[in-house]
Image 1: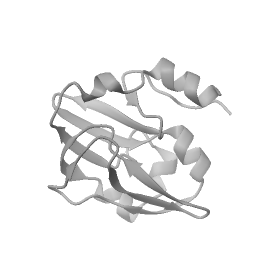
Image 2: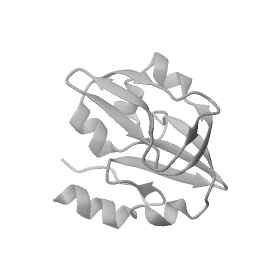
Image 3: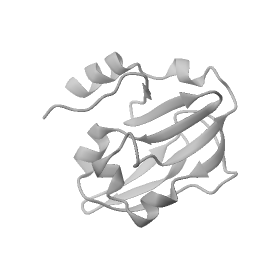
Image 4: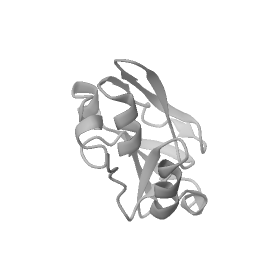
Length: 128
């Protein structure tokens, strides 16, 4: 199965992605993560105003066969959570890089993305 790993995003070893727009990181789970979780039935979103550090849990994703934490790839403050995925958790399966995003974090350190994986690095990680 060919994984969708878009260019222009940053990735974590825990299978989250971050799209950087100014000083905000839009965060979600990767195609690899959703394909391994399979049928996602519930998403617990972070609270607005939550201060997070790199690799701190933003919430959880519950699938039929597993529960998994969503870790923040950047440090900062949660400024928005995707209420759509609360109502329609399967968006994380259907459109993980679009409508299935989890949260937006205003970054405390604009250098955080430099510590994340490039699309090429993430492709190599998931090919192992």
